[in-house]
Image 1 (cartoon, helix red, strand yellow):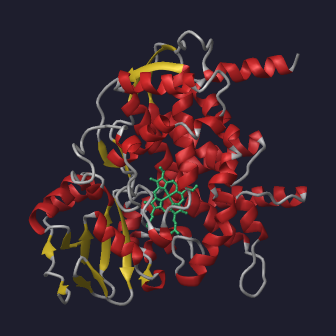
Image 2 (image 1 turned 45 degrees about the vertical axis):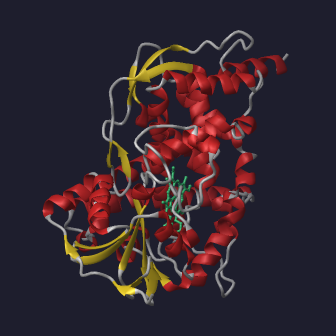
Image 3 (image 1 turned 120 degrees about the vertical axis):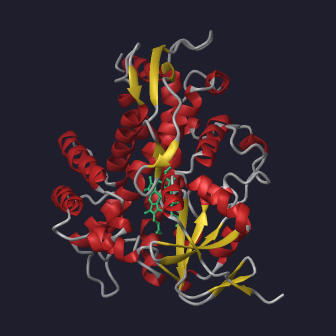
Length: 459
Ligand code: HEM
């Protein structure tokens, strides 16, 4: 059968636009009911083809990467500059990803697991019994420290402190309106001014970081090291601006996303005592000397994290713009048509995930999902570069929290759009009850065991 042309775009009412923004899942569910897995809708003056099933996602990701332009290019060039992964295409994009590959490789990051564990331990040690706390405050601080230590390679505590200040401020000023409406990226628009001031401070900080590395004569095996060693096609080293643009793009992609995901993991575990008991049983069965390396291989721990980002995808969708017409779900998608793959819709497909609204980690123990059935990190040539780092942060962060504390959720929370990404509306309020006491056979929480080990090593 020859491919059909896309149906004319359905104009989206103000109410539906509101729904798309605040509740992308119910927006996609309504579209799916009315149009099937491929819909054409017009909002913000542009036609958007929405792909809402796994087969459609597979077909989008299977196209030649060179045939795609960047989604929201103009917006991201304005915020993050010309030379960074988000706005690169074709060979340049491929080469840049290849450059980062060793520093974001799962094996490389696995070996750094104890650094990640130390970061989680430091942050969860700040909780105290009887306190009600907002999980997202802790988890975004963990995520930021992880990126600074493992991606930017910061080691000095005063550079970390300054980084925490400037990077957290930048994340809080990246208002979605300056992405949705690039014409507002002007000095007279206050959110844009706040963003550019915060960005200038970050670039100054990153400049100091680069100089510090140069002065020490070591480049390092992290992402910053890859950038400092890199040269362009004419053999010239990357400029400081290029390096800063990349660091900014990576930070923007990885900081709040991972923080949100870890907050949701703590939420789902905090509302279900059976899940907590199973997690602890798995960890305690793994022996008294559980290290980060082992945590990364525990199947139930991984299943809980996967099920969380299945149920609460942090990016509700990802986008592509074909340069030449392509065929998706037996329809021709014309050149330059915005194409949105609805991750949230695929993750709630009852054919793939029976009872999709329920949190059931066992799904991930009993079945292996295809790349386009479970796609929290997108797919194809733009699949998330930090997926392994994010997964490891979730597993180690969760392991540390449940083995250190007995806690429960203080109120129900729900998904809403945080900036471009989704996030918990209330930031996941938790009640910290008491330190967790492991069952007989393992004497102390994991975190304390490390301290005990250190003491016995010291004699
Ligand atoms: C749970 C946390 C995270 C989630 C859910 C997430 C999700 C995503 C998604 C959906 C995309 C778009 C993929 C596509 O268009 O197909 C993406 C891209 C990207 N992510 Fe992540 N991400 C997370 C954490 C991270 C971290 C920790 C980093 C780095 C430290 C990172 C770096 C990137 C980069 C650089 C891109 C752009 C890749 C490209 O355009 O080639 N992300 N991420």
